[in-house]
Length: 478
Image 1 (cartoon, rainbow, N blue to C red):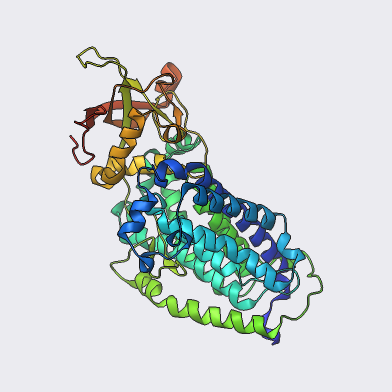
Image 2 (image 1 turned 90 degrees about the vertical axis):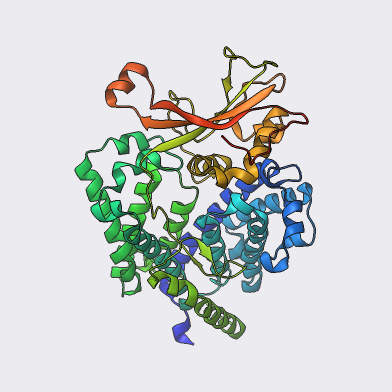
């Protein structure tokens, strides 16, 4: 079938596959380095406990068959190895069926991780990686031209990512319609980056122009993905520029980079280079691709209905394998930044003069003098959840108590998630958590004090606790 392939998109596929392999590598590396403290056998939300409470229908995966920390580490590091192999182009040196298997393995391994990740893996970029990774299985390799159907399905994913994000904004917080959300966003976003302070200090007319441009890119430009070339390539290019702007302004794990990866697949690179000679795809491959296309279109009904619904939800999966999902972000914008600051003391008896020392987190704001760092596409899961904890203590109830308990034990795996442990020689006798209001300093304050943030105490989040029979339940908050 001549219509089945698009020879000119061979370079689009190549760039897309290598970029996706890089995202996979970051995702598996994040899982391998953080899982023990978060979901390990002695983690804050242990996988064995989760598996006992849920069944196969709640989330099929490898860990339904067996779980141990050693097995999870094997899965994560195997995923890293597969990602490196794909990044190096291993799929181009094997038959088509083997290349499909090479792409199916990291998808299945990461799906198994997400299925037991619980709150730590409840972000839209997890489902986006799985949905994109599933389609990559059927994109073929250098032996055949890219299938048109899969290329269109990748654009359908990109359309839902951008258009869904645009709709959730227009329907959500009124500041998006007034073009004023960026008066606050750069200061109150989950994890600011090194340039976020400077973005926040841009003139208000520039912020309003940013929001207006965002609406155009997310509500109008995505429609152009389904128009003839070179218009579709130009639309994808505008999305890439917008996503790079977001990369500079904050830390959003691999969301922006994966969106860029999807956009690259829509660019017609044949405008710049001629395609190599490629063989016709085998019949079995055509049948498989058409069957997968029919499946995705069938599963797209509920996500598509969600897009046009007045009660639109974002970052929702409608099937247990995360094959077709809804996306969106920042339907509402916080006006005030609240941060949970965790402290400990080695004094056995507390009094008014007790000296408290602060734990340092890698990414989230803490020390006012510390400039925010760039971590994305790497994902600091604990730091992200701490932002949500400050907004809603109930959100942190399942894991915050265990987190504080691990600090009282000087748990090695938990401390590895942090930048600074003020008690390197012996565990603290007591720990506590307090909520502070953070705001960016002005230019004058920054020059005078060297502080990027000004913070003010608001309230207790968790009163001082210690290990022992009277250990404070995580449900008891001030």
